[in-house]
Amino acid sequence: MTLLKLENVYKTYHMGKVSVPVLKNINLEIKKGEYVSIMGPSGSGKSTMMNLIGALDRPSKGRILLNGTDISKLSDDRLATLRQKMVGFVFQQFNLIPRLTTLENVELPMWFAGLPKRARAKRARDLLIQVGLGDRLTHKSTELSGGQMQRVAIARALANKPEIILADEPTGNLDSKSGAEIARMLDRLNDEGKTIIIVTHDPTLAKIARRIISLKDGEIVDDRIS
Amino acid sequence: MIEYLELTIKNLTYRKMRTFLTLLGIVIGITAIVALVSIGAGMTKSVNAQFDRLGADKIFVASMVAGGGSGEGLRDKDLRRIEKLPGVKAVIPVVTLIAGSEFKGEEKALPITGVPAKEAEKVFSDAQAFRILNGRWIVSGDRKKATIGYNIYNDFYRVKVSVGDKIEIQGNEIEVIGIFADTGDNNQNSRIFMDFDYLREIMNKGDEITSMVVRLDDVSKAEAVSIRIKEALEKNHDTSSFVVLTSEQLVKQITDSFKVIQVVFGGIAAVSLIVGGVGIANTMIMNVLERTKEIGIMKATGARGSHILKMIVVESGIIGLIGGSIGIVIGYLISLGINIAAERFLGANVLTTAVTPALAGFALSFSFVVGIISGVYPAYRASKLDPVVALRS
Ligand SMILES: Nc1ncnc2c1ncn2[C@@H]1O[C@H](COP(=O)(O)OP(=O)(O)OP(=O)(O)O)[C@@H](O)[C@H]1O
Ligand SMILES: [Mg+2]
Image (cartoon, rainbow over all chains, first blue to last red):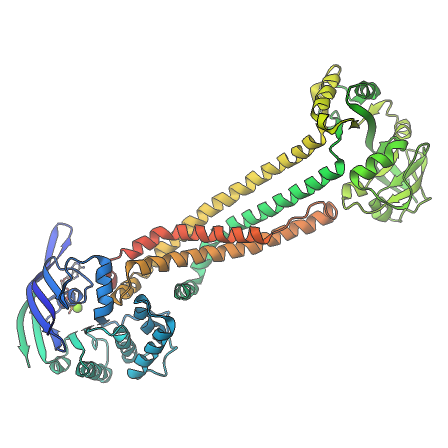
């Protein structure tokens, strides 16, 4: 079952008079439950593609179908709602909100989704226990190690039970041991049926993925199932 | 709502110094409003009370020669002229002056009020709430006698004055025959009352009159009679040498003078609230800039523009509310301070200011609204941030 489809997708940034074509004629189909890794040199447009897939941004040209809905022309609010339900982001810099506790960070997406406080708190706690941080619920993110922060971020990404987890270099800021832990976690999520798309420079992490897409200068140069 | 509050408190405590500076304008504005309204209300209350005591059936005529006016002062012939005017029931002349006095070897300048002895009790006891503490009022035929105010008895001289004591005024021994209870007004507590004719005699005042209390036949004619009195006096006096005021005009004159204070305070309040609002807006714009990345994160994790908008507006409103609360507390302290000062220097019950719950509630809502209005623009900007750009910052 096709979960995601990019049809002739272009993304061009305009900086004053100069237009920078970042993605050129991307065609891509991802099925539910796939584990896809996107590789490519720096500046090749990996993050830009992730933002489009995650409904954070709109393409300059072409169509993106997420679960059958064309998201390329949706309003900001519709996009936000779709994002809320469908995708969970994991970033290289963790991107936790420093003033909030781990529990509150995980609750945040559920709050945006309108979940009542008790349900939210319970699910956040369960998720944190799942990622092995049951004893860090009231810690601020500044009091956590990188690996722990990324686990909180994964718990947060899972909060609203999204179809897709989008992880942009999730191990980029981690030592190899924590990195391996995160990789195992993503693998397990994929086993549980989540569609996983990651961007990585790390060949060992990329190998876990069943499918590797290579980008170069904004174009797909290779798409291989291992 | 609870969530927005929680977030706000975290955000505000994170930047304490900035929050404090932001609060300053709104604090000053609300302080000014609370102080202003409580003082204004207190003044109005005390003036109304005074009006009740004066009674509406009187007109006051005062010579302004000593107070900067020009021309001739009021004299007996003016009194006789006023007495003959239609609508006038009686005219009581008053002479007020300050004379040298000596009591038990201590010399001091003493404020004295002279009223016709037979009218004294009537005029002052119902008009100004004098009550006898000891002894009695001066009555008809009491020439070398005086009834004294509470402060004169209590602490004017080093030695307390008792009924039967003699105070020397201008070489004349005056016997104290009565002492008034505390009236609550230091000005009235600090004078003595003697017979009008006798006082003029010993002070060589000839037929000078300081002021007159005109009693009316009919309260509703006060305005008309006051005009008649003015016209009668203008025949041989400069208009600047006297004033004629009905009780109502007297009260109005006092309340009008409050308006100047109110305008000044109101101006301070308005300016500080505007400055405070701009300060809040400025801080919120800075907060939004600083939190651009966070706003990006929130959007990436499912926040809609309206979530961000509400978050910033609530935060801004809370800043207003905190500033308002501090302003109310300071305003209340100022009001309290004025009460204490008024009691100390003017006497008890002369001016009682009060911060009512309604006033506090109004000030609080007002500061909240100022905060919210100031937050709208920064919040709108934040809500429109492009998540991709925000995340890259
Ligand atoms: N908002 C933007 N405005 C202008 N140019 C942009 C913007 N976002 C990305 N770019 C440009 O698009 C190109 C691709 O950026 P992108 O972040 O997608 O690369 P990437 O493959 O993720 O690189 P990296 O591996 O370094 O993260 C870069 O040249 C970048 O400078
Ligand atoms: Mg990137």
